[in-house]
Image (cartoon, rainbow, N blue to C red; front, side, top):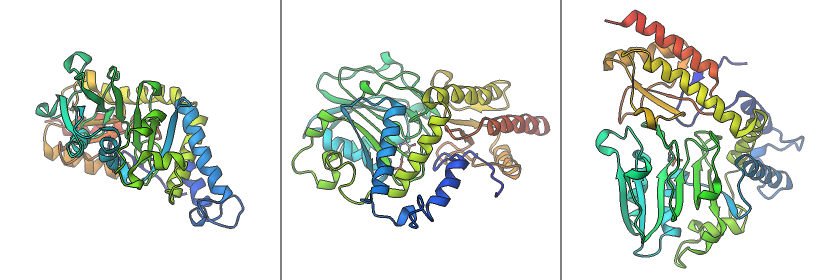
Length: 361
Ligand SMILES: *Cc1c(COP(=O)(O)O)cnc(C)c1O
């Protein structure tokens, strides 16, 4: 087997090696059919079983109630920025958004094309280094829904608890779905691009409460109505077959690891290792305020940009890849999704100690 490095990429992110190996076999010859998985009809009984398996596992692992539909869509998580207001925000109606980073900002821009958008909270002036507590914003009585991003991939913040509202609650969970236990019944809609925490790029998962499927205005293009895909089990047109398959394999792996609760425990432990190192002195500085820290993406800085460049280069040489921070805040960022092994975090922490010792002024 090729030597693998520790891949701290923010997305597409690292996947379990067992899943990659199984996929490499199935792509050539799926279940002894003599046909590769990605050259097979999406309506074949083999592929239908794959899609069903992925959906069922997701339902089981996330305990999704029966009155929710699970959709496998294309167009990336970014397409949800317009699909949500297009389907769920009536003409001239109001919706409330919490602005906690790049992804919420983009969602707000799209939503403004459809209705009256109220930004009830923003941490933009403090470079998005925190998320709000419940008493820092309110949702107007005339608002249709409250939208928030549960984990801010770029700035490394995460809602420790979810907003509470009597309005529809909608969340972009692209970078922390399946990383911690959540109560789906509190939400109207949850969506996530697969490529951060549950598979390859190409499929976006939407979990939507059934009654909301009826809200879409009549003049909405067929492909952009949630109901189109819900009614046809995400097979209205050719779905992203490989991505749906690969998500299913990741879910099987996740179940074998003990499910979401086990993942959550491990994610807390992994993040603690790294935050403890960051907090151990003043050489490394975390970007996020402590109460808002993400368990998935951990951006941090060194004393100077020169040292950061040196750190990233030397880390790469010892097999710690993808640590360069996003261009909007610079510095370093370690993304440690579900499939990222604890040993990789331990190796990074050891490297950080050595680097500090040999580069401290
Ligand atoms: C990556 C990301 C997106 C964008 O996903 P695409 O599939 O590239 O459109 C949206 N939201 C969050 C939280 C992300 O991390």
